[in-house]
Image (cartoon, rainbow, N blue to C red; front, side, top):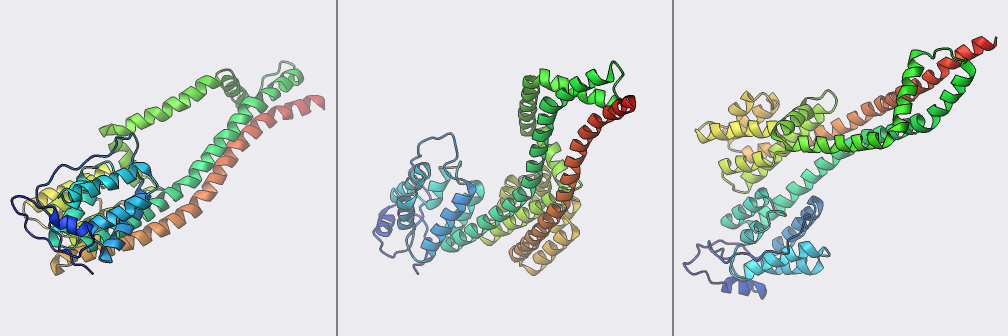
Length: 393
């Protein structure tokens, strides 16, 4: 395997090293501190690649580099086999940056819509330590596990969302198509007698939905867009994030997923050689939850003053005692990255168990929810029939 060694850059960076690499000659990599600006790819309105595709690309790149293939040659191989045009242009742009004497991380930083700060800083740390192959392997593993945990959380949310959508569709059809026909039957058979309060309320809602169905659809769409706008505000994001980790049913799942994300991100950055303050900043910015980010910010400020990680993390009252205790042990033994990885693995398993338990709990709740909605309509339509039968007898 070709070794990735880092040398101090000369005053005038010579791209000959990278040219040799491009030709497939095994030589040590020289990462100059200053290089030409990376050529940017065509501007697009959508991200050139999704998270899953980026994880696959990183795994393939890590495999090639770890096998001894030069980074430039690896990028050229991946660019040729890339079917997504926009992302192929990104990879080619990164390769052009290396050909012109720049670092791999320089090319990555020119595309922030694809490679976030965590990705770029881990690569920089790998370049600085001469362990780019190890860092890429660690980064690909991190992205695969993050993708897996996010997929499980989404899977837990899909079932109740589908059930609610089906229930709303069924009730809407009943209210707009079926219930108005019963109103004509009741008015002919009851001969002016008052309808039960529940039936009258159902008919009132049905008549409104039938006469103003466009308004109802516009209201539903407006409510959705209003929620999206509210979620983008600082106050709205704070409220929604608080509800996510404190809600009775889903809160435990979201909190465990957030802890797994925090510990895996923080541990991966530290293991890759990123300084602890910079690692905390990146972890805070990629936490995905305002309250988790605020807790990490508290830890960052305390560590900057000379404190450790465990005590200020415990003072935020967000992370369980087991997490802070294990982090404290990791700090005392000098094995904090390994301890963070163990915590992340533990909470990954906890998320698996929470998803399985949540599915078993949500299923009967959704069945009862649909039964109550449809049952209320049936009872409201059945009550006038009792009066009609009594009149006939």
